[in-house]
Image 1: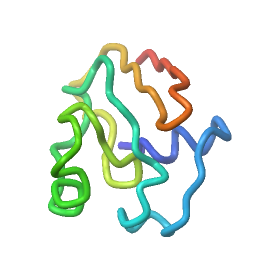
Image 2: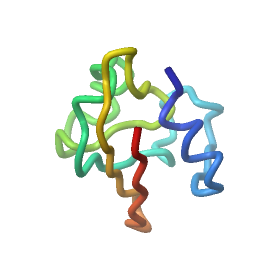
Image 3: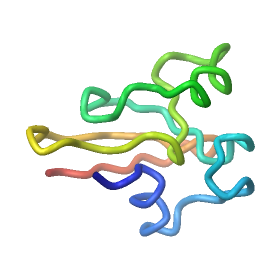
Image 4: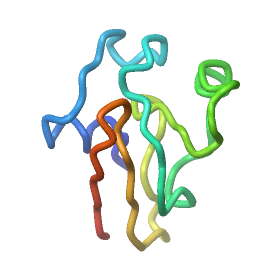
Length: 88
């Protein structure tokens, strides 16, 4: 299962200031579609995003997919609000 962060880095779409520790917030994304394909929020995400919309995730903390998951995921990177789509 790839980290959502890895997929964004492969697209050269992301800055990362905390080495993936979930502290800086530069990898915050909004999950527009397909959120069920992501892992549940861990404690780091819950704390960092506690006052943010439920659709926001930290790409460095979320993993994408499992052996049974198929579908499309649409995310918007913050703050630029660029839409990225991945089909599986």
